[in-house]
Image 1 (cartoon, helix red, strand yellow):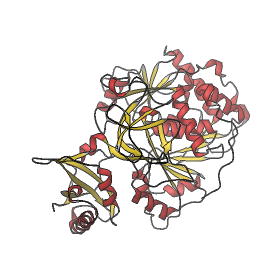
Image 2: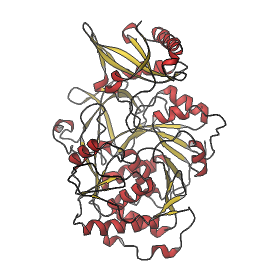
Image 3: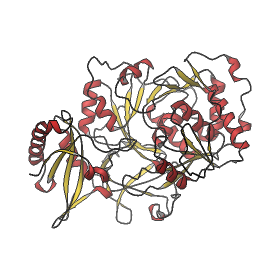
Image 4: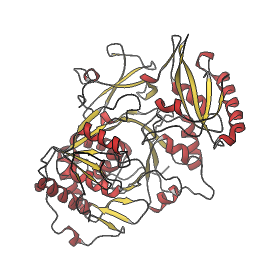
Length: 522
């Protein structure tokens, strides 16, 4: 593991400044320093270019009559274009509604109905019949080829922060909806910068750090941990349009990345090196978020790459990160310790439970919402500001959080509660299993029983049915040996892949419709 990084040049100025003033500060420090690079071509965006982009957005939105605090949709597939738009709109004091540029017309129309933007700026065609103005982003001249220094004259005419609003911007997003109907969430710029500052402090990020982000930019993780944490630290972020397995490590090495922002599904794929592939040096850590990280995946990745994995826990309602493992005191299987957010584990009417006892995870803090922007969730935040996360877990004696799973995912088998994660960890430890999801299936007598859907490393399709049969036989034998009879799956289905959302979360509600290569009903 590399030595601890040097102290940052500026000590967290974001707390009192807002995005516009922070951007102005970074540009004044070094306008030619690169803020963002495109992972697969030679384009980059400097801090000076980012300040110019903010000025363009301020002027364009003013011309459209979208005032301070107004909501602006962004459906931009190009990573640098999105980065300039996201930071520029925040600096202009408006609210960004990040939209999935790859969504269907119906999905985009539904998202616009929930977020209610005054206009959408996009690099894709609009959905048919959408009443919201669909516009081309401002010029985009801020991104330039090459990563070398730009001439100082490139700042001529750049706006001062007096041309930009302070503190009134933010984001409006909807949750993934993997466990229920989507919720609308509004976060202010101060909440976003609070969490971004906590990420920077916890991981010791400095202006010399270079993050590699292959995660979708229309989700809170990449926006706060990728873009805004980079702005706070004064460093550089390398942006992919999406995760590309082929050539991943070559791109990481070419851009001299010092850390990687990932999710468990990505780490699982990177844990198996391709022929002739080398892991570059200089990487301090890989950060895992979005979903619980199975211990077997962590162990395989670290053994294959030599890079330490830092598991974290976050959610949109908390502007991303809630807990994170310390770099030098990691606990496999744990989501880490609270970072800038209060965390409790409770039962009943929010009575705290002893260490080691599973209960409901509740949170509050400067980055956490005080209410949802959509109706029907008024009971999720109590009078003291504690938000029900919907997750189950426990805190150990040292304050590390261990997640047991979503409350909605718990399987009640004849009165006995089964947490899918405890079964999934056992299945994943069997060699040849790449991924697994355990869900409850209706049963006439027991209520619900556990069923496992798994992906085999050597199973590519129906032609590999024999290989799949051998695999599930080994998996069942393992479960029978290590789990009580009640916790053993009543069926094992080998599938080609697990249905996933954009951030790698398994869409459990879609598992029943997945094509099965082989099944075992012991």
